Image (cartoon, rainbow, N blue to C red; front, side, top):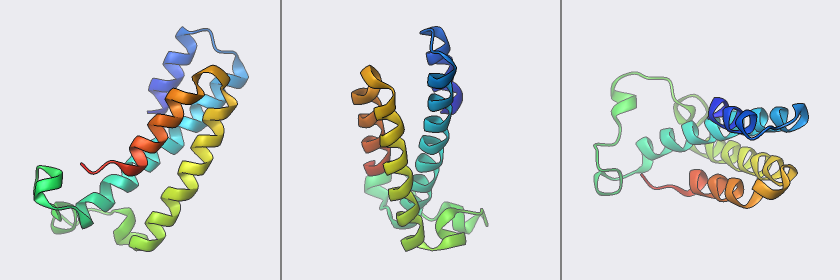
Length: 110
């Protein structure tokens, strides 16, 4: 996600400060996506996910909820979402679209 945001910024002529903001935003969005994905695998239903939940645990994969617990994973998501929203706001005109992406990644159900 960080690479995608940075490439878009470079294509649009972003300066060094904006590039750094896009990188930091992308890193937070990527981790936010991963933690939400891990939580969905723990808490989701087959109907919501369109697949069988619990596959990560059965495969012995390391996940945020497995390492830190569900509550701590949710707390980390909130921090990442707040940080990402702040970074998106720093970008000015792009803020609305990027803030919508933060909300989508935080609340997705599949």
